[in-house]
Length: 361
Image (cartoon, rainbow, N blue to C red; front, top):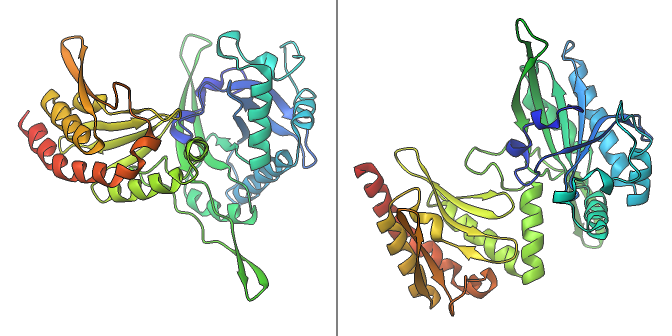
């Protein structure tokens, strides 16, 4: 993992966490050393504990240990976090002068922005905690119960199996990663205030996300809604209500660097019905690319009608994309927030047509 962090299937666990960068091994904390520490170019944090799963009884202990390590990080300032990381084991690599120095030049944020991002994730408890083993088998879901003892943090937890095979006649190895369990952001405690009395009760374990909603409720989603809140305070609630309406139609939200609205056709294809970017831009031009150009045109014309905009044809190789524009510009989500119900209604009317068209193609 240290030499080849790309073996970790982070895109299956937190889609917005791109290209983890190895920081160190054996990072010291008050609870003991963290096996592996990673960061991303935009200040996301990943820790990974590597374990051989010989003793099933030890599994709960391993999970609790990893979460104890994570809780140590949440109490650190950026300066404390960086200092601890720089006391870790860098193997044969030269020790860097700072965490920011580890980020490739081509991907670097300004240093102050990087420090702010790491500090924010430490403060909010937003990290990915991985348990990586050679053969995690039955009973993995029961380990989620251990998460309930770590209240107030918003980490994503995952169990990852790395199967390693030696290739005959060479020194090369084939590594096959498999994500066996990932949580949504876990609500670990419920605080109630009734008649002036405060009580704290453990929350029920959060179920593992379904395939269709596997990115709802994770760190990527939280960061997306933070960006929306910065654009308009009530926007996150409006978008959550919108997603609930869409779920009744079989449309689901996939959170990456943006919110993608996806729908699976009867013949097994996936159509992107809209992209809401963190800067607020709303792109609907992809709708015809995985379905039919005719659907893309009609769908965008219907949206333009309810949003008070126009439709712009966009040549794309041998095809044509269609995009709604307001006053000649790509719509901003805060400008169409009052029309999200109308967007859901457009989808309700047009998806049966798309289902028929894709079955005929």
